[in-house]
Length: 87
Image 1 (tube, one colour):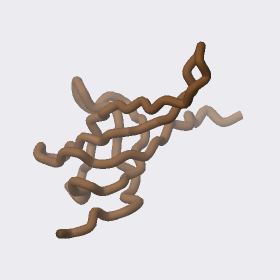
Image 2 (cartoon, rainbow, N blue to C red; image 1 turned 135 degrees about the horizontal axis):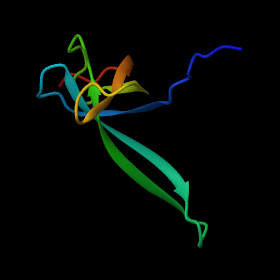
Image 3 (cartoon, rainbow, N blue to C red; image 1 turned 90 degrees about the vertical axis):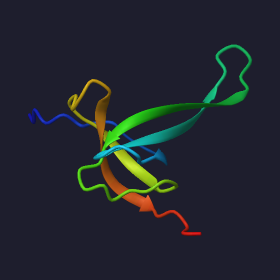
Image 4 (cartoon, one colour; image 1 turned 180 degrees about the horizontal axis):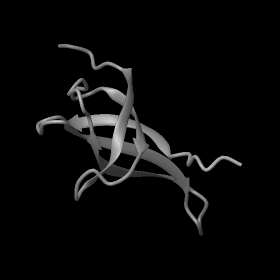
């Protein structure tokens, strides 16, 4: 039996890359309302560790939960799914 833990992965859009080695990622999810059954949109921002500062605002990225890196960061960048269009 393996003791390896499978971490959660989610994808979202980078909204800020101002700080060094950290990006803010907005994750949107659609959930069903518990009483009325209507599909509603919920969003949350995560602070994500980006070791190489490779992501930019507007990129769609895949992030993975990890051990706490700082007070606010416990997610890390796995890969960039789609690059932002350069205007």
